[in-house]
Image 1 (tube, rainbow, N blue to C red):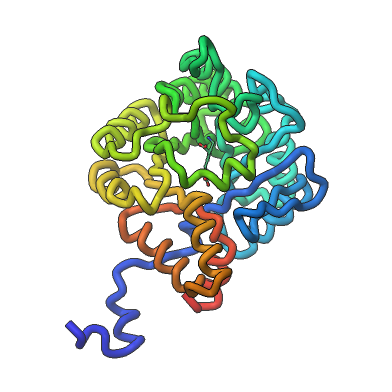
Image 2 (spheres, protein in one colour):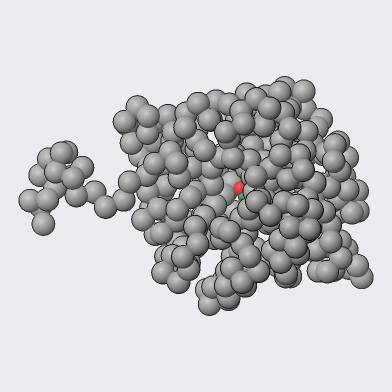
Length: 320
Ligand code: PBG
């Protein structure tokens, strides 16, 4: 076997998986209440941004060749029904208009969920102490329509309600947006790895947890059923989230479905790398290379990652 590893050139020739900048999606947090940039402590290098800086970061990503950004919004204020999520002049709608105007080639993906916008922090409408699935669907559909009206190319529902892909597809088609895509967070697990994101978005649930709608971590067959339903309901891209502790599902989904497959390298996965690197315990660049390459090798076509900008730079320099 060692004959195949004898030189850098030989290794390059027989390399089976190649990470490309085309595979990367950069998440951005846009905050109504931030003028410039407010760093997120648990996610070194990531900040909550005002609209102007979000435009700058999207532009910088695009110049590095990153094809798409995923936008999360922090509203001016939150309420029980998350109304800023579907306000035509809400924070992500304003950000989308500004980014589209400045860099029209960037693919804009909108996270469709209510948890960043609700005072209780749950991903839907609360009724009798629980999240009401079907009332939530109406608001998610309204959110998706208001996002694409503002210029989003892709609606990405992350709420894990049943039937949301069908509801959003129907609403988009009804509003004349047959051309806009749906990227479904299909197999999204109730995960401790979202901790830093919830700190960043102030979206931790005020009571209970998300286990009645996000998936139970031990369940793999159920994850494949979730993906299958989203395919039937009209999803254009499907996702497994988080990535690293669910790579078995990335591999199984790759074998079973022919749609583009996305994996979300989430905030907790990012924070662990950053913390260990800051302590000098790991070589960040090598680790990020292995993480992103591993996610691709498992079968993902696209990777949502907070490492996107660094990775794009390292790919460009040829140091990956
Ligand atoms: C909103 C949403 C979450 C993430 C993406 N969309 C948080 C959650 O479900 O609690 C997590 C992303 C990350 O951790 O990087 N529902």
